[in-house]
Length: 102
Image 1 (cartoon, rainbow, N blue to C red):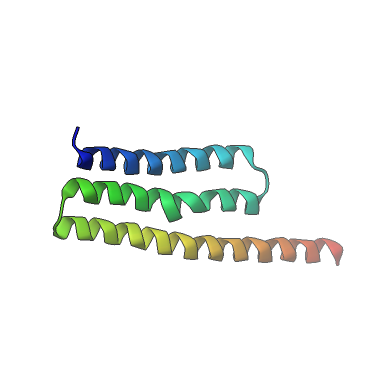
Image 2: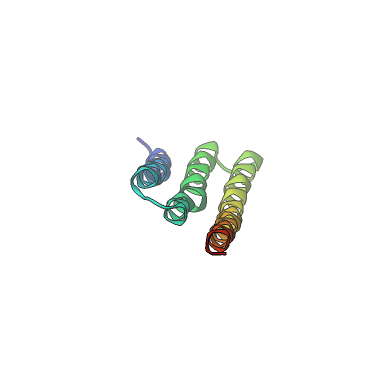
């Protein structure tokens, strides 16, 4: 095993572990915001770690740069999406409470 291969395996399993732990957290947690909070790590850390593993495996070149860019897009896009869904669910819950109290 070369050091490069070991690096790929460490990055890959770290990303997969992040995804699996988040999936278990979604199953165990109750409430929309708590589940949404559990979905943030895969998009912010899991996918970028897996993309980094693939980029290291590809070596230096255009393909690695494209893969790293995809990981970056997932990290930024996942964060923005999580914030947007959180705000929308909070507004929906506030709207439901105003309908039931009025």
